[in-house]
Length: 591
Image 1 (cartoon, rainbow, N blue to C red):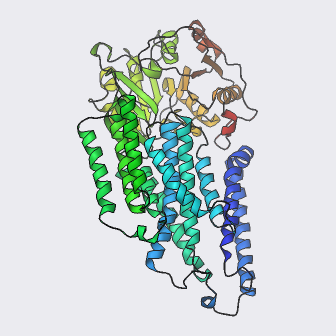
Image 2 (image 1 turned 90 degrees about the vertical axis):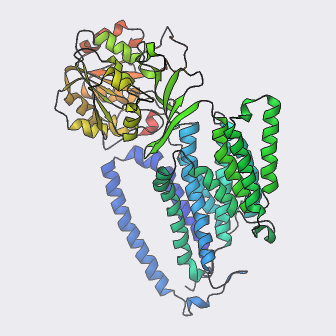
Image 3 (image 1 turned 60 degrees about the vertical axis):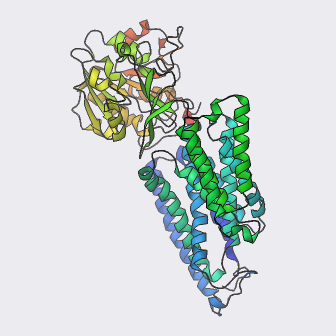
C-alpha cells in the first residue's frame, strides 16, 4: 500500500499478540465465569462473523490504497536481501518451533514434576505471547543481545539444579529460562525478517514451525518417549539456535561433536557403575557441580557444541540422581506413569507425574492391605466400617482404578466394577510384577475402559449400592464428573439407599462448597470427614491423608458415619450458581 510503514509493517505483530494476551487473560477471569458454554458458542459465532467482515474491510482498504509500483520493487531494510534461501526458511521454522515446543514442555514439566497448580498453564503461555510482542516492537524493551548472552548462564544453572524440583527457586528458574530462550528465538526471528514482499511467506513458515512444535509435544513425544524428554531436548536445540558472538564460532568442527560425546561417555560410566554424585558428601557434591558447570561454560561460546553438551547433562541427570528404583515407566495420552520401588524397599508405588495413584506392600503378610488414600482408618475405610457391615454394599462401582487397592474391601457377596479412562493404568494394575490387588482381592471384578461418566451411563439404573468417584488428583479437575448432571446420573444408577463417595483431595482447590451447592440444589444429604484426632502408621505409603465427601438421598442413610471419628455435615453452602455441564468457574474453587 501507499502507507508510510508499508516497507516494514512487522510492528503489527505486537498488536495481534496483544489481542492474544487480552483473550488469554480474559477467558478464565471474565468470559468463563460470566457465560455458559451455549452462550459462549453463540458469542464466538457472532465474533467470527464480525471478524470476516473486518478482514473483508481490510482487504478492500488495502486494494483501494494499493501502491502502483510492483511489490518486488519495495525497498529492502538495511542489511536485508530481496531473495530468501531455503536455509533461511528452515531457520525461520526452527526459531518458531523451539519456543512453541518449550512452552508446552515447561508447562508439562512444572505441572507434573513440581507443582500441580490450577491455571498454571497461563503463565508460560503469557510469557510466550509477551516475547513475540517484545521481539517485533519498534523499540524492543528487552534486546536480543541481552537474551543471547543470558541464555547460556540460565541454562547452565538449570542443568545443575534439574533434580531439585521441590524448591520455589527452581520453579522460577524454569520459567526464567523459558522466558529468555523465547526472547532469544523470537528476537532472532525479528532480526531475520525479510522485506515486506515476503511477509506472507515469513508468516506461513513461522506458523508452520509453531504448529510443528505443538504437534511434536502432543502427538510425537508420547509415542517416542516414556518421559518428558522433549523438554530437555528442545532446550538443547534452542542453545544451538543461539546466534554466535563471533562469526567463526558458528562454523562446525570435529570438537563440536567430540567434546559433548566425551561428556556423555563420562555420564554413561557413572550410571553403569552406579555412582550417584549428589548422594555423596558435601565436598564431592560441590566438586561434581563445579566440574559440570565449568565444562558447560567453556563450551557455551560455540552454539552447537554447547547445545549437545546441555543435552548430555539434562538426559543423564535423572538417571544419576533418582532416589527410588524405577521398575517401569510408560507414557500415554494422559501423562507419564511410573512404577517405583521405594528406597526403603517396602512398597511398589504407582505415580502419575508426582501424584501417588496407589502403593502395595511387598511384605506377603500385608500384601492385600489397602494403602495410601484407601487405608482402613481413612474415610473410605470408615465408610465401609460404618455403612457396609450389614451387606448393604453388594454392588460397587468405582470410577478411577489406580492400582486397584480399593478392591481389597471386597468380601463375600460384594462385587466390584471399575471404570478407568487410561488403558495404561489398567495394564499396570493387572501386571503381577508390580501389583496384585485385583488378582488377589477381586479376581472377578469387571474393569471397563473409557470415560467413567459415559461408561456408567450405559449401565442399568439402580444397579449399584455404592459409587466411588476417584478422579480428582493433580490440577486437572475433570469438571464433567462433578456437575449437577453428573451427580444426577450417579443417583440414577444408585439403589434407593445407595451412597455416592467422592475423593476430592487437592492441594489448591476446595471442591466441598461446589458439591454442597449441587447436593443442596438436588435435596441430597452430605457428610465429610472433619479434623482427625489420631494418626496411624508412620510408614511412607501406608497412610496418606485424604479428603472425601459422602452423598445420599436421605440423612438417615449416612447417620452411622457420625460414629466415626471426625465425620460431620459440611457447613459451607457453596456458590450461588451450581456447576452444570454448561457452566463452571474454577476460580470459585481456589483455596
